[in-house]
Every structure is written in C-alpha cells, then in structure tokens.
Length: 118
Image 1 (cartoon, rainbow, N blue to C red):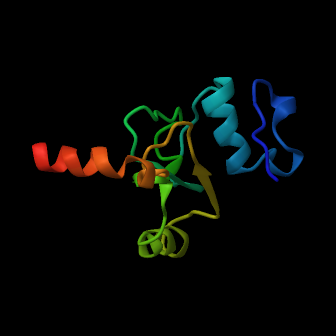
Image 2: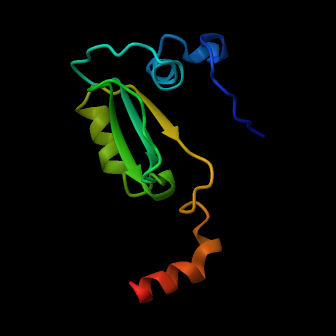
C-alpha cells in the first residue's frame, strides 16, 4: 500500500527524485525554490481540472494536462506528443484530496439533478 509523504524540506524528497524534474517540481511547489528560466519543458504534469489546484512552477517548465479526476485516458496523443516532439523525459501525476470527479459515482443524483436544473 502506498502512503503520501509530506515534503516540507529537501531531505523529504525521495533520493531517486533528487536532481530530476520530479524533484524540482517538489522543490518549486512545496519548498519555494527560486524560479529559473527554461527554454523547453522537461516535465509533463497530469492533474485534475479542479479550480483549487494552483501549481507553483516557472514558465516553460512543464506541459500540463488537466482532466477530471486527473484521468489521463483519452490524453494518450497529448502525452505521446510531449515525449516525442517536446523535450519531456519525465511525467508527474498530481492528485488532490476530496476529488469529486474521482468519486463521481457517489454524486450521481446531485450531478443529474444539477444538469436538469441548469
């Protein structure tokens, strides 16, 4: 079973991610690393479309794909493009707590009622 690991200092970043785009993402977002200049993106980030997600990264650092529940199905072409044509060599998937899109089955009735009302 996987567990979340808080990253509040550099020592908390898993060794295999240090000095990689995944580790840099954690440094930028969690630790306030100073933003650098990038000519091309070394990272692809997949995350939810939720409006509460604001990723703290420098310009040109990552391609970002936002989908409901961070579901990357039907994004295969975009992912392939970033790796094949872009400079991407790494991908990070960012989830979040209380994701209603990931648990859509529990909100079936409110979802249907909202569609009908709106």
